[in-house]
Image (cartoon, rainbow, N blue to C red; front, side, top):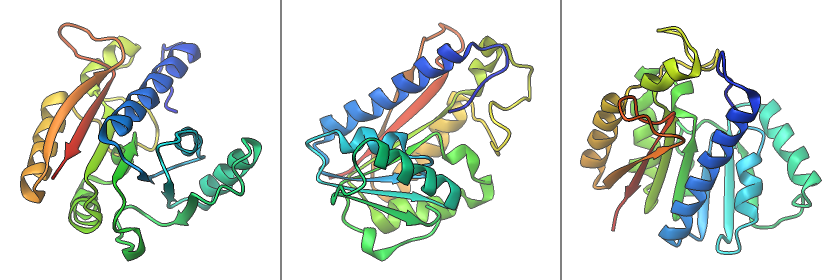
Length: 209
């Protein structure tokens, strides 16, 4: 979970919870029964997915062994160690894994901004051309809102962010991905909405079929 200068920790926690709630709602609406969590990190969203009776198969991918170890520990604490619906993979979501083809949905929650911009084409190739789930959900920071988090211009929300996009930049990229790969895309605000600057988190919902 990202922390922003000048923002209270409870505010960051509330926004993070709202973000996960929004993704879960979209997954329910899509009737997805299998979900790829791309960039699953320490497993918080995997626990949420495992609590959804609608979802029968879950795969979490992360390029960090430390993050996957933390995910295993969290799943064990939550009583999900032996959940046969759930598998973890040490892999980058810029790489295509053939056995993961056929999932109904893929989610990338606050992950694309950790990828170097020149590698986003590899993400598109692996996820939208390779896995081709019916639904793809992507959340990412809205950099226009950063001033309301007490941040100086040009400062990112997390030390590992490679970029943070405005709403126009994110929409332009997402619409291009959708057009090239046969998807439709819609956009949602997550968090309190400012009339001029939008919301802290922006979400794209890609769907096909």
